[in-house]
Length: 95
Image: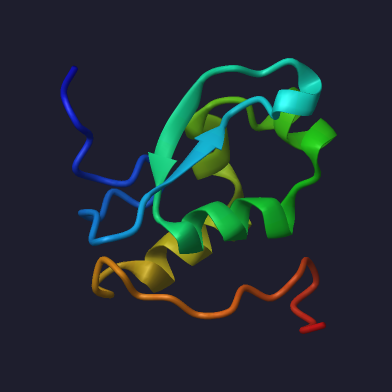
């Protein structure tokens, strides 16, 4: 099996850290996973609840079409592979 070298969401190369994301959450019956940077994984879960992920964002293409994700990926472009910043919850407010 070939190891993925780029993040399924942002397309940047991986550094030391990779997380696996269930396109359809396990709680909604999902099994398949894709590799993501930790910051990309956290952004997805900060924006969408599990039901939204299962119903509207169960593919990488659907996620990439979302305007919030488009802005995030554009902002992330050019950052190093292991770049990390605390992810703000939906609405932009920090807890």
